[in-house]
Image 1 (cartoon, helix red, strand yellow):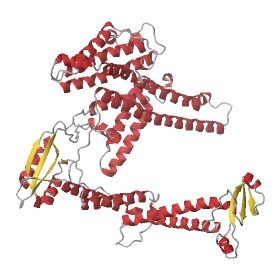
Image 2 (spheres, rainbow, N blue to C red):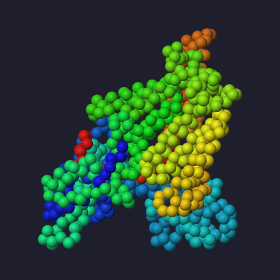
Image 3 (spheres, rainbow, N blue to C red):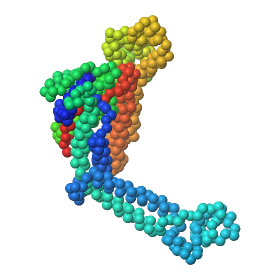
Image 4 (cartoon, rainbow, N blue to C red):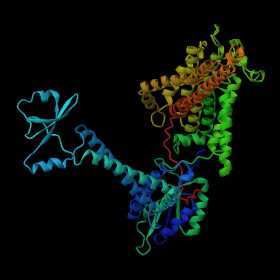
Length: 640
């Protein structure tokens, strides 16, 4: 549930400005309205924080892997750690750039061999001026009367010297020093880098200290930003200047703000946010619905203040999608057990089980349920499963049960095909995918209707809902050979007609509104086609689950462990049996591990997409344009 907000403005005397801000921060309820502010103090703090963040990032890359590698620091207490780290990093970068430059120069001159460039300068004192040339062999052959001294040759060039300039050729630029000197420089620079990296490693234990200073500095920056963002109230006596600050507070907490204003002598003005304003989003749900919050945090999605909180429906459908994509109860057991172990280990340290561990535990359970009812355990054939696992299976989702076993209450609505499909279990799962699609998308339009009532535009959403039901039967007819009922065509036509009539009924002449709606015929028609495609897109749940099962079966066949055990290893030595068995186990671990990772990726690509794009984006018109409610408050220090 998105908590309603109130826009509040607090007014106080300027002379108590810092005191008032301190009390406001201790109250910790008001999300201050963002402003672009500047001040010399704020700029210094921002620069300092940026420097500390850079220093902490540098030190993290030099943290020793083993605790015993930590060395005591060799710094005076007056040394600024952040500045010292940045200075060391700059010196390290300069040394690396020098090594790169020297290496390039070595590659340029090493073909000439090792020589001292100063020797050429000394020859000039004796009236001998030699210029070096790197001449392509063809150009060298064209030299006629030119006198040159050849130092060497390779497949492409001739390396020579000439006392007089060679026409049309550019002399080779002499290096600043000899090859030996360059290599000596590189060795010295590498030693400098090594020494710097050792110093950075010894300083890496200061990361927690730097992080603590960053946290404290962030609080100071927030305070200074609030101070700089206060507005002066006009038409006040010059002797008693007054300033104000504006922000948003959750409506249920407005009473606490009023009491604080009365206690501190603040003037308070509270109103509902205007239509054009964008308050922060605060979502409060029960512990069960909050299971989905780690996923929203990972995706960085926050609904706008006037959008929907789809956490409950997102959790429900996402759980179904994950279960169908993984599709294997054994994978669910792995996820379930690992999540519980990881969560409890964190709980022992922090006293609280992470929300992410709770989410993965729940998703693991859902995978177990779905895998159990379709009889998938590491893709082992149904016939090879123990009887107690076979008993969990719903036959329609596993074996070749005829479509006549389709639930009777549904057979009155859906005219199943007379010709049996090749695999009725697959047919049933595809039917389930499309049914999940229409349930979720119809639910989206019901939410739209509820939001738009009592406006006539709500009837347009009702028309679209009716059209979606007709499209659902059209999908079943085209892909599953279910006979298309007569009412489906009427639903599509009537639904679209109702939509065109009421889509623009926001006031004014109703007939002009209808004409305006029909002027958008092409975009509306394309949206209707898109809705048809949205229903079809849910088939991905079946396709991805089937692909994962096929991959698992392939690795099971590659391992050949079943054949090895059934033959008892006849004619093979014990060593051969052990090696084959070990190889089979490795293939199974690798194969199913790879399949697990691919399924996890499929959840992001497909499971998240169905919720964010088809459901929330296309049918709820959500843009996820919100930002989180973060009140001006005293930040709790993290345990280090």
